[in-house]
Length: 174
Length: 203
Image (cartoon, rainbow over all chains, first blue to last red; front, top):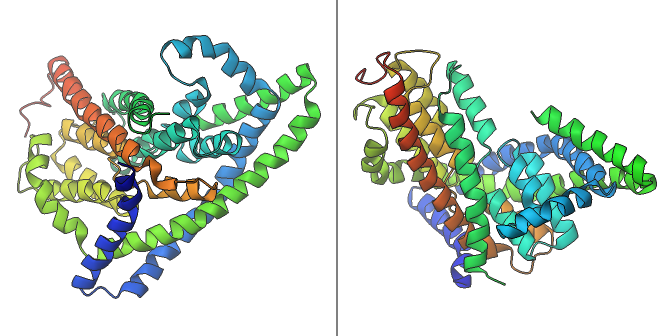
């Protein structure tokens, strides 16, 4: 199992490169072209991340986060859901950069290989930012009545949260 | 929405620090947060720069078109209201393929083209059609095969095994996407009964 995870990225990398070689793609030029966009995307993220990390850090260092987590923990222990992950679960459908800020904050305090870190990674990686997708897609063609699309998007995010907890317990355990 | 969350975190934090006397921790926490924001973004820069370069190669190798052929029968079943030969079907299949390959940057323009084509089939122009809702369900759930960004960030934070999350992520995303399709089906049926303005039978 662990081997599949470890080889997934290198294997798909090799697959892409071989397919490109087969199709005679000018590899390095195309790579640089795409990488430029990537760099720009990362730079554009800085203001978002700084803004959100400051808010998260203020909330945490004031002791408010601990207080809220403690208050909620009896309820969450009943359903075996770690209360520390609640903020990430709530923010993930709204803003990808914000939930990423929370995930890295959790990494700094619990480590990426802790159970919490693994579940947070899975929650962040397994879905897209619902609100963003809805806004961009419907906005592009002037749809003002989204009907049930918002409901479906948010409900499947909820499923994704519990599926992440379940998947980490099942596959990695601990 | 984001505005409200941001201001709530800030003011609640400052208020709570004032009440509990954690003011000096708060001030240092504030600058720690700002520093962490830049550090994470810079760390991400290496990951995203490299991965988007590779993704561009995947695009140029026409992997999207290759996968599209395989996905077409599935798309027909997911979008029964779209005529098979309509350009919308082509765009939908391309969008699904790009998502499946993890080509987020390519998936969005393809998805928007699909929306444009679906709008031509839509009877009420400011109201989402059934097919549009299905397309949105697929894109918000976004089936992820390789969570490259998360692997990179985990490496950035000195994870002993950054790739460990690949299988759990795949399982979670499969469950969530299946749920999205089922929920979309369920609500489509329910709403079809509620609305009798020609949304059904229009295509």
